[in-house]
Length: 352
Image 1 (cartoon, rainbow, N blue to C red):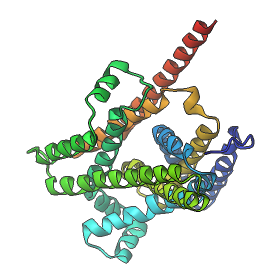
Image 2: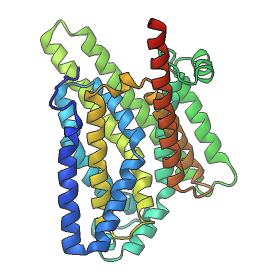
Image 3: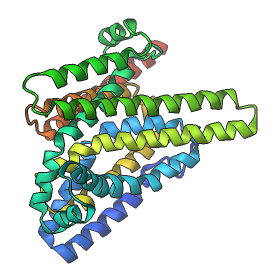
Image 4: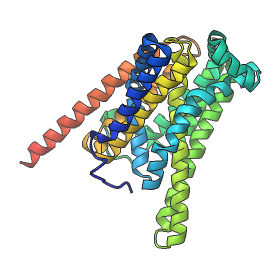
Protein backbone atom coordinates (compact mmCIF):
# COMPACT_ATOMS: atom_id res chain seq x y z
CA UNK A 1 0.00 0.00 0.00
CA UNK A 2 2.91 2.33 0.52
CA UNK A 3 4.10 4.14 -2.54
CA UNK A 4 7.67 3.83 -3.71
CA UNK A 5 8.54 7.46 -4.25
CA UNK A 6 12.15 8.08 -5.35
CA UNK A 7 12.10 11.49 -3.69
CA UNK A 8 11.57 9.87 -0.30
CA UNK A 9 13.63 6.73 -0.89
CA UNK A 10 16.93 8.31 0.08
CA UNK A 11 18.65 9.88 3.08
CA UNK A 12 16.87 13.13 2.12
CA UNK A 13 14.10 12.10 4.53
CA UNK A 14 16.47 13.14 7.33
CA UNK A 15 16.94 16.71 6.06
CA UNK A 16 13.91 18.11 7.93
CA UNK A 17 15.02 16.41 11.16
CA UNK A 18 18.55 17.76 10.71
CA UNK A 19 17.36 21.33 10.08
CA UNK A 20 15.01 21.26 13.09
CA UNK A 21 17.81 19.81 15.23
CA UNK A 22 20.27 22.57 14.29
CA UNK A 23 17.70 25.33 14.81
CA UNK A 24 16.54 23.86 18.13
CA UNK A 25 20.06 23.50 19.52
CA UNK A 26 20.88 27.04 18.38
CA UNK A 27 17.81 28.45 20.16
CA UNK A 28 18.60 26.47 23.32
CA UNK A 29 22.18 27.78 23.31
CA UNK A 30 21.03 31.37 22.77
CA UNK A 31 18.34 31.40 25.47
CA UNK A 32 19.63 28.78 27.95
CA UNK A 33 23.38 28.56 27.41
CA UNK A 34 25.98 26.16 26.04
CA UNK A 35 25.61 23.61 28.87
CA UNK A 36 21.85 23.37 28.27
CA UNK A 37 22.51 22.87 24.55
CA UNK A 38 24.87 19.97 25.28
CA UNK A 39 22.28 18.38 27.61
CA UNK A 40 19.58 18.67 24.95
CA UNK A 41 21.89 17.13 22.35
CA UNK A 42 22.68 14.26 24.73
CA UNK A 43 18.97 13.53 25.23
CA UNK A 44 18.41 13.58 21.46
CA UNK A 45 21.16 11.01 20.93
CA UNK A 46 19.87 8.82 23.77
CA UNK A 47 16.33 8.85 22.39
CA UNK A 48 17.47 7.93 18.88
CA UNK A 49 20.02 5.31 19.95
CA UNK A 50 17.57 3.43 22.16
CA UNK A 51 14.65 3.62 19.70
CA UNK A 52 15.93 1.61 16.74
CA UNK A 53 13.64 -1.28 17.67
CA UNK A 54 10.71 1.13 17.90
CA UNK A 55 11.45 2.42 14.38
CA UNK A 56 11.61 -1.13 13.01
CA UNK A 57 8.25 -2.14 14.49
CA UNK A 58 6.71 1.15 13.36
CA UNK A 59 8.00 0.54 9.84
CA UNK A 60 6.39 -2.91 9.61
CA UNK A 61 2.99 -1.50 10.56
CA UNK A 62 3.43 1.66 8.48
CA UNK A 63 4.19 -0.39 5.36
CA UNK A 64 0.63 -1.77 5.46
CA UNK A 65 -0.97 1.66 5.82
CA UNK A 66 -2.21 3.96 3.07
CA UNK A 67 -0.16 7.03 2.00
CA UNK A 68 -2.66 9.25 3.85
CA UNK A 69 -2.11 7.50 7.18
CA UNK A 70 1.63 7.42 6.60
CA UNK A 71 1.53 11.22 6.28
CA UNK A 72 -0.66 11.47 9.38
CA UNK A 73 1.87 9.44 11.34
CA UNK A 74 4.72 11.66 10.18
CA UNK A 75 2.89 14.98 10.77
CA UNK A 76 0.07 14.88 13.31
CA UNK A 77 1.63 11.82 14.93
CA UNK A 78 4.85 13.66 15.71
CA UNK A 79 2.84 16.33 17.56
CA UNK A 80 1.32 13.59 19.71
CA UNK A 81 4.76 12.05 20.27
CA UNK A 82 6.42 15.33 21.25
CA UNK A 83 3.73 17.25 23.13
CA UNK A 84 1.40 14.42 24.12
CA UNK A 85 3.79 11.74 25.33
CA UNK A 86 6.79 13.86 26.39
CA UNK A 87 4.90 16.73 28.07
CA UNK A 88 1.15 16.22 28.61
CA UNK A 89 1.06 12.54 29.53
CA UNK A 90 3.68 12.73 32.34
CA UNK A 91 1.69 15.62 33.82
CA UNK A 92 -1.52 13.54 33.68
CA UNK A 93 0.28 10.62 35.34
CA UNK A 94 1.45 12.86 38.19
CA UNK A 95 -2.06 14.34 38.54
CA UNK A 96 -3.57 10.85 38.86
CA UNK A 97 -0.99 9.40 41.24
CA UNK A 98 -0.27 12.46 43.40
CA UNK A 99 -3.89 13.72 43.52
CA UNK A 100 -2.88 17.19 42.33
CA UNK A 101 -4.61 19.59 39.96
CA UNK A 102 -3.34 20.43 36.49
CA UNK A 103 -2.17 23.84 37.65
CA UNK A 104 -0.29 22.41 40.64
CA UNK A 105 1.52 19.82 38.55
CA UNK A 106 2.34 22.37 35.83
CA UNK A 107 3.75 24.67 38.53
CA UNK A 108 5.90 21.85 39.91
CA UNK A 109 7.17 20.97 36.42
CA UNK A 110 8.32 24.54 35.71
CA UNK A 111 9.16 25.92 39.15
CA UNK A 112 10.06 22.90 41.31
CA UNK A 113 11.42 20.25 38.91
CA UNK A 114 12.91 18.16 41.75
CA UNK A 115 9.49 17.64 43.31
CA UNK A 116 7.99 16.99 39.88
CA UNK A 117 10.64 14.35 39.18
CA UNK A 118 9.97 12.77 42.57
CA UNK A 119 6.21 12.66 41.89
CA UNK A 120 6.82 11.12 38.47
CA UNK A 121 9.14 8.57 40.05
CA UNK A 122 6.36 7.55 42.45
CA UNK A 123 4.20 6.83 39.39
CA UNK A 124 6.86 4.52 37.95
CA UNK A 125 5.26 1.22 39.13
CA UNK A 126 2.07 1.86 37.17
CA UNK A 127 3.99 3.13 34.15
CA UNK A 128 6.35 0.15 34.21
CA UNK A 129 3.53 -2.38 34.59
CA UNK A 130 1.49 -0.86 31.75
CA UNK A 131 4.40 -0.48 29.33
CA UNK A 132 5.99 -3.77 30.33
CA UNK A 133 2.86 -5.87 29.78
CA UNK A 134 1.91 -4.06 26.57
CA UNK A 135 5.35 -4.75 25.07
CA UNK A 136 5.53 -8.29 26.52
CA UNK A 137 2.19 -9.16 24.89
CA UNK A 138 3.37 -7.65 21.59
CA UNK A 139 6.56 -9.76 21.62
CA UNK A 140 4.70 -12.96 22.51
CA UNK A 141 2.15 -12.35 19.74
CA UNK A 142 4.96 -12.15 17.20
CA UNK A 143 6.81 -15.27 18.33
CA UNK A 144 3.67 -17.41 18.77
CA UNK A 145 2.41 -16.47 15.29
CA UNK A 146 2.49 -19.79 13.40
CA UNK A 147 1.77 -18.10 10.06
CA UNK A 148 5.24 -16.52 10.09
CA UNK A 149 7.53 -18.40 7.69
CA UNK A 150 10.81 -16.56 8.24
CA UNK A 151 12.66 -17.53 11.44
CA UNK A 152 15.94 -16.22 12.77
CA UNK A 153 16.69 -18.43 15.81
CA UNK A 154 14.99 -21.32 14.07
CA UNK A 155 14.71 -23.98 16.79
CA UNK A 156 13.45 -21.63 19.48
CA UNK A 157 11.00 -19.79 17.24
CA UNK A 158 9.72 -23.01 15.63
CA UNK A 159 9.04 -24.45 19.12
CA UNK A 160 6.90 -21.45 20.07
CA UNK A 161 5.00 -21.65 16.79
CA UNK A 162 4.36 -25.40 17.25
CA UNK A 163 2.75 -24.97 20.68
CA UNK A 164 0.65 -21.99 19.59
CA UNK A 165 -3.11 -22.04 20.07
CA UNK A 166 -5.62 -19.28 19.40
CA UNK A 167 -5.18 -16.57 22.04
CA UNK A 168 -2.30 -18.38 23.77
CA UNK A 169 -0.16 -15.25 23.83
CA UNK A 170 -2.87 -13.43 25.82
CA UNK A 171 -3.21 -16.33 28.27
CA UNK A 172 0.56 -16.47 28.84
CA UNK A 173 0.68 -12.69 29.33
CA UNK A 174 -2.13 -12.79 31.92
CA UNK A 175 -0.51 -15.67 33.83
CA UNK A 176 2.84 -13.88 33.78
CA UNK A 177 1.20 -10.70 35.10
CA UNK A 178 -0.49 -12.61 37.94
CA UNK A 179 2.86 -14.12 38.92
CA UNK A 180 4.60 -10.72 38.88
CA UNK A 181 1.83 -9.14 40.96
CA UNK A 182 1.78 -12.04 43.46
CA UNK A 183 5.54 -12.18 44.14
CA UNK A 184 5.95 -11.36 47.87
CA UNK A 185 8.74 -8.87 47.14
CA UNK A 186 6.53 -6.73 44.91
CA UNK A 187 5.84 -3.49 46.85
CA UNK A 188 3.09 -2.41 44.45
CA UNK A 189 0.90 -5.47 43.70
CA UNK A 190 -2.36 -3.56 43.10
CA UNK A 191 -0.75 -1.02 40.74
CA UNK A 192 1.07 -3.83 38.93
CA UNK A 193 -2.09 -5.88 38.42
CA UNK A 194 -4.30 -2.95 37.41
CA UNK A 195 -1.90 -1.17 35.05
CA UNK A 196 -0.58 -4.44 33.62
CA UNK A 197 -4.10 -5.66 32.83
CA UNK A 198 -4.83 -2.34 31.09
CA UNK A 199 -1.64 -2.75 29.04
CA UNK A 200 -2.63 -6.25 27.89
CA UNK A 201 -6.21 -5.18 27.20
CA UNK A 202 -5.23 -2.16 25.13
CA UNK A 203 -2.84 -4.21 23.01
CA UNK A 204 -5.46 -6.89 22.33
CA UNK A 205 -8.17 -4.29 21.62
CA UNK A 206 -6.21 -2.06 19.26
CA UNK A 207 -4.40 -4.87 17.44
CA UNK A 208 -7.67 -6.77 17.12
CA UNK A 209 -9.45 -3.75 15.65
CA UNK A 210 -6.61 -3.19 13.19
CA UNK A 211 -6.80 -6.80 11.97
CA UNK A 212 -10.61 -6.68 11.80
CA UNK A 213 -10.70 -3.54 9.68
CA UNK A 214 -7.91 -4.86 7.46
CA UNK A 215 -9.92 -8.03 6.76
CA UNK A 216 -12.99 -5.92 6.01
CA UNK A 217 -10.93 -3.87 3.57
CA UNK A 218 -9.76 -7.02 1.76
CA UNK A 219 -13.36 -8.27 1.45
CA UNK A 220 -14.70 -4.93 0.27
CA UNK A 221 -12.03 -4.06 -2.30
CA UNK A 222 -14.45 -4.56 -5.19
CA UNK A 223 -17.02 -2.22 -3.67
CA UNK A 224 -15.42 1.21 -3.71
CA UNK A 225 -17.50 2.91 -1.02
CA UNK A 226 -17.17 0.17 1.57
CA UNK A 227 -13.54 -0.41 0.66
CA UNK A 228 -12.74 3.26 1.33
CA UNK A 229 -14.53 3.14 4.67
CA UNK A 230 -12.77 -0.08 5.70
CA UNK A 231 -9.41 1.33 4.64
CA UNK A 232 -10.00 4.47 6.69
CA UNK A 233 -10.95 2.46 9.80
CA UNK A 234 -7.98 0.10 9.36
CA UNK A 235 -5.66 3.09 8.99
CA UNK A 236 -7.10 4.78 12.07
CA UNK A 237 -6.72 1.62 14.17
CA UNK A 238 -3.12 1.18 13.00
CA UNK A 239 -2.41 4.86 13.70
CA UNK A 240 -3.72 4.53 17.28
CA UNK A 241 -1.73 1.32 17.70
CA UNK A 242 1.49 3.06 16.62
CA UNK A 243 0.89 5.95 19.03
CA UNK A 244 0.26 3.60 21.97
CA UNK A 245 3.35 1.63 20.99
CA UNK A 246 5.39 4.82 20.93
CA UNK A 247 3.99 5.69 24.36
CA UNK A 248 5.07 2.33 25.75
CA UNK A 249 8.60 2.93 24.51
CA UNK A 250 8.72 6.53 25.75
CA UNK A 251 7.43 6.14 29.32
CA UNK A 252 10.67 4.87 30.82
CA UNK A 253 12.71 7.22 28.65
CA UNK A 254 10.91 10.25 30.10
CA UNK A 255 11.56 9.08 33.66
CA UNK A 256 15.16 8.13 32.83
CA UNK A 257 15.76 11.58 31.34
CA UNK A 258 15.52 13.06 34.83
CA UNK A 259 18.82 11.30 35.57
CA UNK A 260 20.39 13.64 32.99
CA UNK A 261 18.54 16.85 33.90
CA UNK A 262 15.60 18.03 36.00
CA UNK A 263 14.72 20.77 33.48
CA UNK A 264 11.42 19.65 31.89
CA UNK A 265 11.90 22.08 28.99
CA UNK A 266 15.22 20.46 28.06
CA UNK A 267 13.70 17.01 28.48
CA UNK A 268 10.81 17.86 26.19
CA UNK A 269 13.14 19.43 23.62
CA UNK A 270 15.74 16.65 23.68
CA UNK A 271 13.34 13.70 23.63
CA UNK A 272 10.98 15.47 21.23
CA UNK A 273 13.63 16.11 18.57
CA UNK A 274 14.94 12.57 19.15
CA UNK A 275 11.42 11.27 18.46
CA UNK A 276 11.42 13.24 15.20
CA UNK A 277 14.60 11.42 14.13
CA UNK A 278 12.95 8.09 14.97
CA UNK A 279 10.02 9.07 12.70
CA UNK A 280 12.45 9.91 9.87
CA UNK A 281 14.26 6.60 10.39
CA UNK A 282 10.91 4.80 10.23
CA UNK A 283 10.05 6.48 6.92
CA UNK A 284 13.49 5.62 5.52
CA UNK A 285 13.04 1.95 6.47
CA UNK A 286 9.61 1.88 4.80
CA UNK A 287 10.53 3.49 1.48
CA UNK A 288 13.91 1.79 1.10
CA UNK A 289 12.24 -1.54 1.99
CA UNK A 290 14.97 -2.20 4.53
CA UNK A 291 12.95 -4.97 6.19
CA UNK A 292 12.97 -6.90 2.91
CA UNK A 293 16.71 -6.49 2.52
CA UNK A 294 17.53 -7.41 6.13
CA UNK A 295 14.98 -10.14 6.76
CA UNK A 296 15.85 -10.73 10.44
CA UNK A 297 15.60 -7.10 11.58
CA UNK A 298 11.98 -7.52 12.64
CA UNK A 299 12.88 -10.58 14.70
CA UNK A 300 15.69 -8.72 16.44
CA UNK A 301 13.36 -5.82 17.23
CA UNK A 302 10.90 -8.17 18.93
CA UNK A 303 13.66 -9.82 20.96
CA UNK A 304 14.73 -6.35 22.13
CA UNK A 305 11.11 -5.44 22.88
CA UNK A 306 10.82 -8.59 25.00
CA UNK A 307 14.00 -7.62 26.85
CA UNK A 308 12.72 -4.07 27.39
CA UNK A 309 9.41 -5.43 28.70
CA UNK A 310 11.20 -7.68 31.19
CA UNK A 311 13.44 -4.78 32.22
CA UNK A 312 10.42 -2.61 32.95
CA UNK A 313 8.79 -5.37 35.01
CA UNK A 314 12.00 -6.27 36.85
CA UNK A 315 12.25 -2.55 37.60
CA UNK A 316 9.33 -3.05 39.99
CA UNK A 317 11.81 -4.87 42.24
CA UNK A 318 15.28 -3.68 41.21
CA UNK A 319 16.46 -0.61 39.33
CA UNK A 320 18.10 -1.51 36.02
CA UNK A 321 19.70 1.27 33.95
CA UNK A 322 17.93 1.61 30.61
CA UNK A 323 21.35 2.09 29.02
CA UNK A 324 22.05 -1.63 29.29
CA UNK A 325 18.92 -2.53 27.36
CA UNK A 326 19.75 0.06 24.72
CA UNK A 327 23.27 -1.27 24.22
CA UNK A 328 22.06 -4.88 24.13
CA UNK A 329 19.43 -3.83 21.63
CA UNK A 330 22.04 -2.34 19.30
CA UNK A 331 24.10 -5.55 19.53
CA UNK A 332 21.08 -7.75 18.77
CA UNK A 333 20.04 -5.58 15.82
CA UNK A 334 23.64 -5.63 14.55
CA UNK A 335 23.67 -9.43 14.78
CA UNK A 336 20.38 -9.60 12.85
CA UNK A 337 21.81 -7.42 10.08
CA UNK A 338 24.93 -9.61 9.89
CA UNK A 339 22.81 -12.79 9.76
CA UNK A 340 20.61 -11.29 7.05
CA UNK A 341 23.62 -10.36 4.91
CA UNK A 342 25.19 -13.81 5.40
CA UNK A 343 22.01 -15.68 4.46
CA UNK A 344 21.52 -13.49 1.39
CA UNK A 345 25.14 -14.12 0.33
CA UNK A 346 24.73 -17.87 0.82
CA UNK A 347 21.52 -17.83 -1.23
CA UNK A 348 23.23 -15.88 -4.03
CA UNK A 349 26.10 -18.41 -4.08
CA UNK A 350 23.63 -21.30 -4.36
CA UNK A 351 22.01 -19.66 -7.39
CA UNK A 352 25.33 -19.48 -9.25
